[in-house]
Length: 375
Image (cartoon, rainbow, N blue to C red; front, side, top):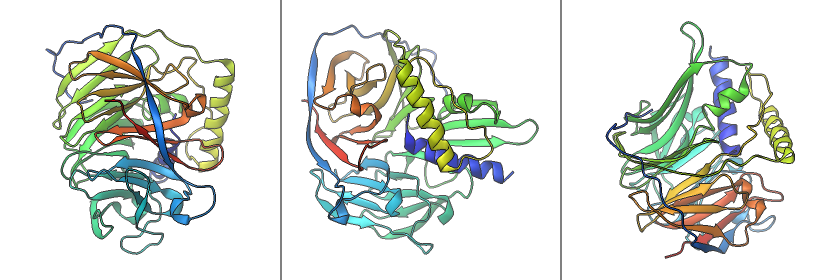
């Protein structure tokens, strides 16, 4: 599960309670890749982050992480109310924004995307919505107004666009939850929808609400406007690719055995989830979560400079990725060397500039790992 998602979810849900899927081409066939025995290693080559020391390398609370089109690493540090920027090898370059209520300052940042044109978009509903900064850190204004129900889990796309999820609860008649993953272009309304679900809102069933919204799919976007999406299912391993307009261009699946969680895993997940929801201050819902007894088939999803799709297996505790070509054929599997089971809570970002990750549940202090992708 993603702690960053939960934080944003609680903020949005509280705001909702206090304030009162893309079209698919039916002619696209599914492809089931053949099994392969080839497994390669991914090496961790560097890291960013200190427990104490130089403040430019000490993180308070990492909320989001992305490569920019320039190859630099952009970090949304919610606890520091800023976006520190690092080179691809981890050297500090600059810091964008700071805490405050003035223009270009941040009060409650919880989502960030680096757009295809190089600008940095930071979602802060207490500062009007999506704030736009140049790659050099100059504030350029609010590009899309969101005072309630802002976009979350932003992923930079092409040009001036990003892909994000949005959760709203409609109160006309019986309350209804509307959940979408869509494309936004400097406007509060999406220009395309890639995933949509609508169901009755039941504040006493937090598990259903989470499973059908924040735990429904993993996704990312590339600089050509394509969107890669993997529904989070305990039964089906499915990967979908959409164009910028929401048209499904590729869909394939892989046969994978279901894996049960241990009793210890379930107990730890339940305790951790409920503790976080309580500490964050979720309102309007009963804080009671029942973990699924099975692991998700897929977790993180990404792409690389060689037009390969990377899908992390949710069935394994260590980071293992299945790597496919753009026809959905399995090329090889890859394992992050030396990461171990502590990487269960790592969130991976993979694009044409490489692979980076950070822990959503760090034991000691926040840190970013830099990895080298195989050729």
